[in-house]
Length: 438
Image (cartoon, rainbow, N blue to C red):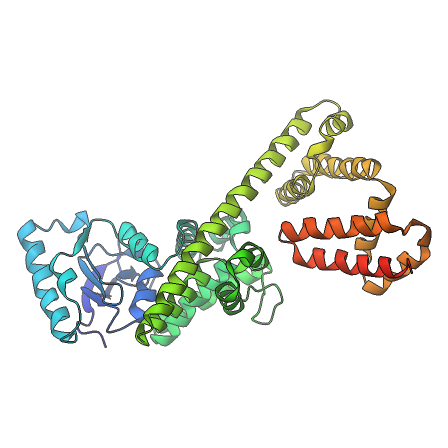
């Protein structure tokens, strides 16, 4: 139990007029109750939700947050509270005494004398998460998921409104969103909050039915966060970009939370060297991943500009030929993504136009390839390794030292691009081709 349990407050729902009570924390000491940190970060502290209609949100209440491991001592006074400076000092003073009373005699206490003050909960959460090493991009993505979840919950029994929000946010209802929803479900179960558990369970069932999303724990597409943490903490610095590329789908809010747990565990074990090592690697992972994302975004932005120019051109084939050097993998991905979006939106004309651009692009790329590169494409398109081996033996006249060299060059290019699986396939093909020369 926290040193100061949450106090019940009586509320009246502004939406339906229902009277109900909600618990309000004044002091969150995550040194005493570590799970309160996750509850706060996931938006489950000082939240009021009407049991009848589901309306509600964050309560404007003063709060002190204490994390002794990081020497964080924060005071939150939302503007709605309208607390005078004297009232703020009295509030902080009374709760600071509680915090100091329960700290070990030899624990640092100087940071408690001047708590950092916040008027916005969002700003305070950002500061806490920055201390955990969670990137702003991951934080913003999680915040958007939480906001979307709130909008979906507020639809209540209005299925038409629920369907509308689902259609408008179909791409956002992905694995990470359902992971967030599952976290709320788990928390409601642990807290034995049957009303919330029933609402979250019903919403998940509705969303699965509307989206067809049914990705279970054993699904191969599910990012393995534990595996990613282990790999990225153990790889040497030179191999970090490749490791990040291999585990990029896992580098989200949950990943950085898992790293924070490793740091907290090392703190608890008194292993200062391990704490410093993980924190340094965490910062390097974040900075490297963000730079890789910026580089990728620039590539896709250029591809999108190329596509727009082709869409605006009168002669599609001529426009593609003019931009032959820009018809790369990123361009094909942008065309495919736009085609899928047009199909989902029911814009048949746009979908057909994009399909024609895709067909012409593939045709032009094939025309521009050397016979050797065209053959490499056929080998990579083979469904099974033995099918590729069979193709090699059926086209023995193409196999020479230049062809083997080309396979190895392509393998190195894929390696540099962080596409290890493709690199390994090309390297294996190179070995098989080389064996045919002797």
